[in-house]
Amino acid sequence: MDLPTDDRMTLPPAPEIWRSVPRGRVLCFAPHPDDEAAGPGGALGMHRAQGDPVRVVLATDGVAGDPDGRYERATYAERRRGESRAGMAHLGVDDFVFWGFPDSCVITDADLEQVAQLAGQQLAGFRPDLVYLPWEGEGNTDHRALYCGVLRGLKRARFAGTVLGYEIWNAMVPDVIVDISAIVATKRRAMLCYESQLAYVDYLHPVFGLNAHRSLLFNKGRGHGEAYRRVRW
Image (cartoon, rainbow, N blue to C red):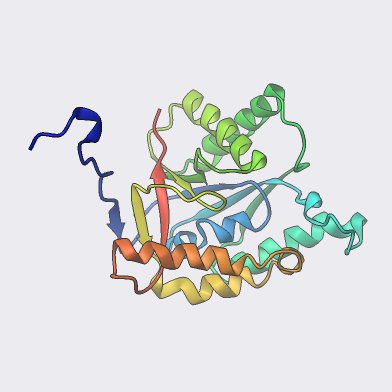
C-alpha cells in the first residue's frame, strides 16, 4: 500500500561511527569553563593521545556560575580557569585562550561581531584542521551566542576544514558519534575537577548518561559515545 507523502516512513541518516578521531590541529571553542570537558572532552583527549595539537578557547569568565555567592567573588573567575586547567590536564590539554566575556548577559549583535573577530584571529593564528563548537540547537544563550559568533568568523575566513558541533544542553540527531569508551574514565576524572559547578548541579549524571545513551547507535548499549553534528554553510 502506498502511503500519502506526509505519512511515508523517513528515518534520519545513520551517523558515522568514529572509533578514532582524524589527525590534525584542533581548535575547540567553549562557552564556559567546564563545557570543554562536558561536551567534546573525550574527543579532545583522543586527539592529544595521538599527538594532535589542541587549543581550547574559553569565551566567558563563568562568574555567573556562583549565584549563591559561595565563593570569593574577587578570585572566582581565576578559580574557574584553574578548574579548566586541572580538568583538561587529565586529557592532556594545556593550551588555553581566555576571552573573559561576562556570562548570562543580554547579547547584542556587537557582541557577536566581537566574537567573530576574535574567532578569526584564532583561526588565522592557530591554523586548525578541525574545529569544535557548540551545536546550533543548544538551549543556553551563551552557547548559542558562541555558535553564532564563531560561525560568522568561520564564514569570513572561508574555513575549509572540518567543523563539528557538540551537545550539552540539548540532545541532537547526530551526524557523527565518537566512541569514547576507552577514555570515558579519564573524562570523568576531568569533570570531577570542576568543583564549583558540581557544588550546584550533578553534571556527571546528565553528561555521562547522554554519552551512555549514544552507545545504542554503535555498540548495542555498551560503552560511551560523544555525538556531533557537522556545521555547514
